[in-house]
Amino acid sequence: MKGIIDMERVAAFSKVSRDIFTSALAGNDCFEGMESAYDDIMLPKRATTGSAGYDFFIPFDLELGAGKTALIPTGIRARINDGWVLMIFPRSGLGFKYRVQLDNTVGIIDSDYYGSSNEGHIMIKITNDSRTGKTLSLTKGQGFAQGIFLPFGITEDDSVSEIRDGGFGSTTK
Image (cartoon, rainbow, N blue to C red; front, top):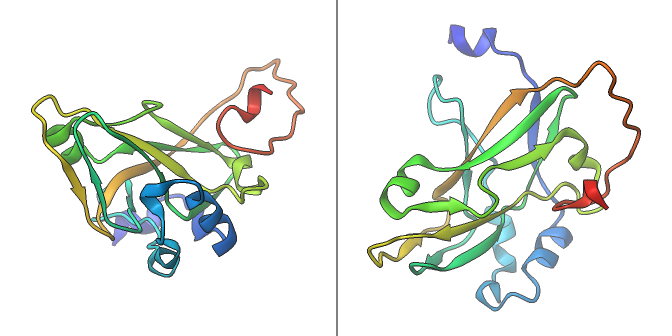
């Protein structure tokens, strides 16, 4: 228990609203009829006291053939203290067995993303890059990605004053 007490607490996970979650499902045939998955969303958690990563759990069953990609609405948001970032990676075992990869290599969740109009909904896009034709089967509640909180610094002459509203690519618009 000593390790938990000594760790700095820098964030809190919560669910996005039902409306935000269901709107993320809309228009994607593979998620048709999965609106009820909202009730079963599990907040990310660490598996052991020594785990750095918080496991993200898929809120529905998903089959992903070799070479196929899926954008997974997690239903999760993270309130993160200033000076910290949440980095998202694939679960090690899935990467090893299926070559599961995040399409942006590493997901970066900034502290100001939480206040965006999409409520900071964390979406994770994965690809099954299996070279042996294996189909990846994820069952509801299975960990498929992991997030690690890391501190970051800024330059001495930093003077940014822009405000975020959105996710992918919103900071360069």
